[in-house]
Every structure is written in C-alpha cells, then in structure tokens.
Image 1 (cartoon, rainbow, N blue to C red):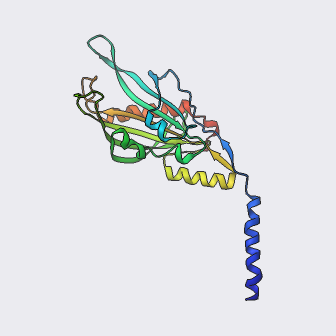
Image 2 (cartoon, one colour):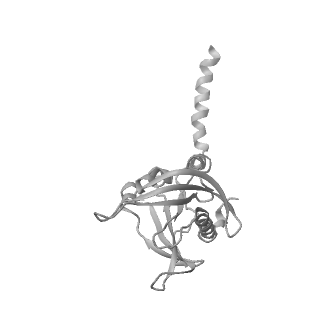
Length: 242
C-alpha cells in the first residue's frame, strides 16, 4: 500500500513531463496538389467554373477551390452545324483550410445534395503517367437534375466518379485513413497537412448531345485515362512518399 502511495505521483509526473518531448504542433505542410489548372492538356479543354453556393456556405472561408468542366472532341463525331461533339468531364479540387473538419470531407457526404444516389463503391489502384501508383475510390451513381425552369422535365444520368485525397506527402482514397494520418502527424511530427480532395465525374448512357449511347466501359476508360494524366501533371511527386 505504501508502494502505491509514492508510485502513483511518479507515474503522473512522468506522463505529464513527457508532453515537453513531443514536437510543437501547428506547423502547416502544403498539399502536393497543384491548384492552378491548365487551360488544356491531352486534347482536354478546361473551362473554369466557380464553386457552388452550397460549397461556399457549408465550408470554411479559407477553403480553396479549383473546378472546371473539361471537354474533349469525340473522334469522327460532328453535329449538324459541323462542330465536334465533345465528351464532358467535371473536375473538382477542394483544398482544406485550417479547420479540416469543416473544409474537406468524403464525397459520399455531399453528393446526395447534388442529386446523386450512389449504387456502388469500390477501390481502384491507378498508375500516374510518371509511374507512381496510387489508390482512388470509384463510385457509380444515378444523378437526378431538377429543371431550372418551370415545365422542363427532370433529367437523370448514370455517373462514374473517381476521387482521392492528396496531402503534403501522402495520397489516400480513404477518409478514415486520412484522419488517422493527421492524428499521427500532429502527435509524432508536429505537422498539420493541408489536404486536397480531387474528384472527376463523367456521365454515361444516353447523353443529349451524343447520338449513340456511351457505355459504362467507355466512360470508365476515359475517366481513368484523365485521372492518371492529371496525377502525372498536377501532383508534385517529389514530396510524396512511395
């Protein structure tokens, strides 16, 4: 009993004193993603678009956005006016601010508000054009778009979305793993990583401006190619751990 009397204060003292040996938290490490989008690459043309009002109202003010509608001519297809018929892909990059909890999250959390009903989810391993392998999450959904004018019909599209998170020196497709990495880095390395959430989406099936139906396999091949090209040119791989 006497041993316990002096042992308890000793253990408490050692535990409290160990705090001084931990790194000082608060140092911010920038994401390896490059936020400035090109005007074009690999025949894709980028048309920058602003973040939605929902994004601006629900995320922290210091959250940064880079969003674009990306178009690429479909080989040998032209409309009645002689213009090339394009594929369309929607690209979104959301870069976290100081409060990670309110400036970045899983896409599954916000996609229903954009009309998506997610029907399938899987993990996919890709390789960038520079040979670096990384994991992405693949979602298949049905998106319902409400009419902007009274009397217009409700439109539904099948959709494929690929997404992943890019930190300072890590890439992951898992929100929980990203959170655990943050906890470890803050405790062990004294570092806060800024994370970017990258997503790319493409419709398939019957698309209004395309004469034939776009198969899921065709859309999937094109979005995979886009994401690997994006990863090769828009990520600073010199700071990412293999």
